[in-house]
Image (cartoon, rainbow, N blue to C red; front, side, top):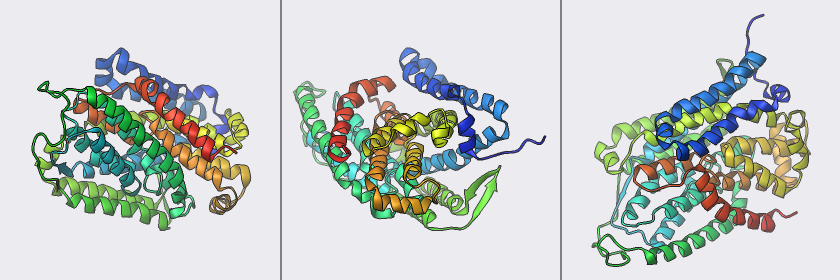
Length: 463
């Protein structure tokens, strides 16, 4: 019997056993434990660990389910991982060619302003673009500070996640919604949710950092270092041509969602021609950035490829190992996690379910899983775009809950959204002491974000 591919993930998901999610859980545990228990081993061999768990997810299912399982894995790599890493790499390369200089000193007030600016930019140039643009200037501005961890953590909360809630190209989950029929400006309905979350986090950051700042001493031991002591240097932006490359890349994202140019098959996986053209344009913009940006600008920026390499390797393992879990979820009630779909039936449930999944999966597939669950719950058997239009008109709170949960909870772990991992890697390269996977959750996410998300639920989704 010839070996053939099949891309029916729903029928596969209904057949997949619960144990098929073990490799994904194993990779999560490895990411949480190894950097603490064996830091040198993890630093030297994280790629091998990621590849091992990916192989353990892939091999048994291909043996048991043949072409159907192979098709599901190929579909994930071709339609999800490759576009994801192309866009992420392009935004990293382009923003790494923009050098913002000046002698701004990191004080509680100036840091809060930078966090606010980054939060506002994130919805219009993407969380990845805004994060990669501003993280290095923020670290340089705080080079004199003894405690730089706090500002990077809140940068991840705000710029790399919550700030992307207002437009489809702000954060990948909302872009998937746009491609699935959600109107471009509909996401502005999340403005009150974002205003509450961002406002509360900025206030908490300012109060915490003001307390820390007062106790810090400058390197000379003369007490807290005040802005302006070192003399004024003008604010300057070098590599400004990269803003053009960034705008073209963003335009390609928008245009791809508006065009219908047919589909082509690649290794059995179907891809829209418009999406292929989008990826080509985005890649070319990254190439232009590398060719037309002076090397010294990247050198002054402390630009290296290691953060992107780390994300690319670890997320390759994550995308492969989480494929069985997503297939099971997309099978709905027919899958082994069907009980989740049966108990998730209120906006508050969707906010927490989509959010919790976004914390440990990439938030884009988590959004898609619960967006589809909401459509199936109210309009089973109806076409996707028509069902989306009816959901927006008749039950908008459910889509608001899925959207806010996917974007906001992406800040809960380092792997909830790709910029989180990249920001952490850049910060560590710059000498900032960052907590490990569990430390990030226990010291910051659970203490700061969890109460905020409970408040969001009580105000916006408690019905």
